Length: 294
Image (tube, rainbow, N blue to C red; front, side, top):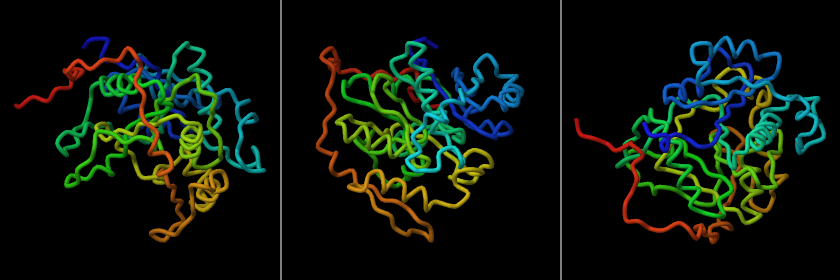
C-alpha cells in the first residue's frame, strides 16, 4: 500500500491497568498502524511484555509523572484522588509536539474496531487509510481544532446519517492540532470540556459518521477509569462539566443514572474555512478502500 494511505501523524493510547486486554492496540495492529501506548512507569514492563509479538508496530512510553502535579483537575483535590487520564493526555500533547508533528491522534484503550459507514452498512476497516482519509479531510480547513470518528452505535442501520457533523463534542478518538493554546483539563469529562473550550474560542470540530469507532461500553472493562475515577458513578462527572461550562450544559436523570446534556446550538453558525490551496477536482480518492463485489 502506498505511504500516502498511512497516517501521517503519531497515534497514542493512554492506558492504565489494562495490559491484559490491549483492546485498541490490537485493533490498530490488525490495521498495520504504528502506535504508542503511554503508561505509568511501574507498568512499563507489563505492557512491553504484552506487546512483544507486535513490537514493530507498538512502542510503550513511560508517563512523566510531573504532569500529574501540573494538571488542572477543576477541583480542590489535586492528586489526593485518582487523577484519570488527563495528565497523560497533556504529556502526549507535548510529546507529539516534540516530534515536530503538527497534529496527533489520541484514543481510549477500549476501542475494539474501526468501521466505515457505506450505504448504512458498518464495514470493519483493516486498512491504515482509515486514519489518513480523516487527516486529509480535516487538513483541508484552516479552522479545525479537533476531529474524530463517531461511535458506531449512533449510526443505526435504518437511519440516514450525513458524512460528518461540525461543531460538537469529539470523544474517545481525537485528532488534535498541536499548536493550539488549549490543554486537557478536568478530572472527569475532559473530552467535552476540551471540545467546548475550543468551540468557544472559535475553532471548529468535525465528527465523522463516514468513519466510526466500535467502543466497549463505559465502565465495563477493568482498569483505567473504571477502577479509579468512576468508582462513584457518573454524578461527579456530570457536575464537573456543568461547573466548567454552565452556559451550555445541565444535569438530568436518564435511565436511572445522572447524565449531563450539552447544547451545541450556539456553535452551529461557525463554518469550516478551506485553505486557499484547496481546489475541487471533481474526483474522490478512495485511499485503496474502494468496495468491490465478490
